[in-house]
Length: 431
DNA sequence: TCTGGGGTCCTAGGACCC
DNA sequence: TCTGGGGTCCTAGGACCC
Image (cartoon, rainbow, N blue to C red; front, side, top):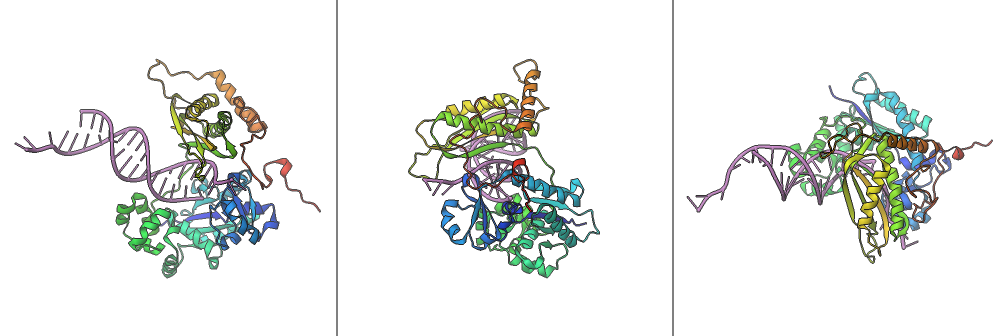
């Protein structure tokens, strides 16, 4: 019994989020920028049509932007995260919970294998209509017998207007599929990146249909088992299952500074703040870290600058989710790698060797497993609750976040309001 | 002047074991 | 003169994803 998997993906997600509450930008060429307004990370259809690439530094694009009237927004992850959650909840109404995989902030797999009678093209249109009406976001739907083919079908639904936003490869004719695949570059296949696409070219593999016709074992010899799986999936043999939410295996928090930093003092402030972010994620998934890492960086794009980008990590004697312990470890690491005289533009912390908090690894050289300090646990829990209730930096470690806007803080020149998550930013309808 | 911030998995090679 | 065969674990680097 062949499977029927749908992939639903929001069109130009970040740009579409900006338009939901600011419809005056409908039809206007939009981009959304990365933190510090650095690079373009999302483009509206109008900007894609101009041929401006993803990932381009904004300052290099400013002339063209002026010329074409492109509007740039700073990243508003509060808004995107909330709209994403709403969108995923709407899609979840179409399948039982175990048949939905939220794959990324703007994509979800839905498994319709068990709903045999359903007309999937009609269901796809129903999903588009409901998401549009309830969240304001435009989505496209791809359907196929494997995840890789569903991804490809979604690509087709987006690029070819004749599919009207829903492409079902499980019912499309063989000839249609052949000609369509022959017209798509192999780079568009899920799992084929820039490197591999380049290496495939001399092998005579240029389009999706070339790759689908390739021998999976030969592809494995050249590119490894991941690529073998990809080829089989293209041929309609399901190798990838829907996955449930797994706890993270590592947690990273890092940011480029709004302005360069020279002193240990300022690096320390940044490390404290980023560790706060990392520990929040850690505690949210009920984990503890066995290894702490930290790094600082100079600007690798400035050739005239002396470069210095050291990193260090340390294994804790006992895994921890205590913000004080973890911050202390990261601070010691940065003090160890810091050298004065460099122009630092970024720092970061990493939590590794994550385990579930319930499984406490004892210390070989102490007779008993160290008992958790009950008062300490209570204090940390109280901090969590205070921060959940009154805002993220209500209680923190040392001077983290005390300064309202440190000089090195992220720059966001054109940030839209948090329309859905802050009372003061709630849209008002005047009549 | 200004160039993001997260993640995952696989593989090869080295160190070590018997 | 001749120098085996089978493993595990860890790490760094590479590839990919959004």
